[in-house]
Length: 354
Image (cartoon, rainbow, N blue to C red; front, side, top):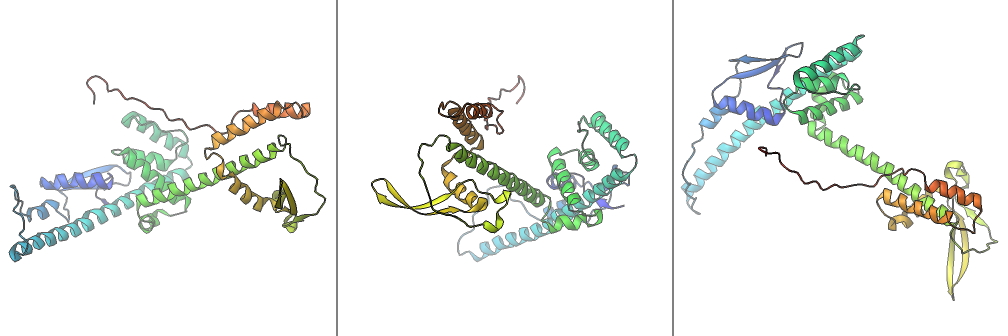
């Protein structure tokens, strides 16, 4: 059986053990094979924080300032600084490093048991039993789709719900990366710890969602210019050739929507066309992105603006009735994007509460 400092978060573990050690109580926590936590009274601990604290003298009155140039005062100052530095190094090694390693090993054991449960032919009934225990003993509701890792973390790391949520996420990330339980502690350490893994994954999700929104926004900008042809009253006849820059990629995915003209202004509202260009969809997207910089960043606002454009097209009596009817239908379809709503809520404390 492996020894564990605690099943709390590192922060709570440090505070709890420090208080116990300061009172001279020797404690330890182990985890049995059935994952029941058992406290052993009187177990030996290699590091006694209260013993280290006893070596320091504490002046309860206002300390006298160190006089500049006073060699004795300066030496005393650096003596205390060095003493505190040694204590800090010992605290870092004994509590932080060992505490984190113990946490990683505990999570590895949870991970191992969860994988065994999921592989069992009676996995569904086992998870239902755990879900029932969570509800009856801890009053914690778990969704039916929750996996064994999520439920076990909630059941075992029961004193800190926020930490339990973080740990469950990290276990899920490890599972997605095909990490074995034996390699889990080294995996977490290599990736910079629990917090760093969670932060990295959150940024990757945000980046992915941001990329999806960028594509949606570009699609709306393109739709705006495609619709605008039904409202524009400026036309001209061009008899020259159109240069295709991506003729070798002339597929439906690369098919452009617009011809890009290069023209020289000659004065008196006259332009001389130099060339007409079909750049293909990929480069056309770049041009539309650049032109669309002035469009609203809020994608819901942008969508509402295009719906108003569609309503305007539907009211244009110069257009064919079928076209107007189609735009009227499109304008009345449910919106795909919802506007962000911020509700200012005044919190009133209950009588007798905080």
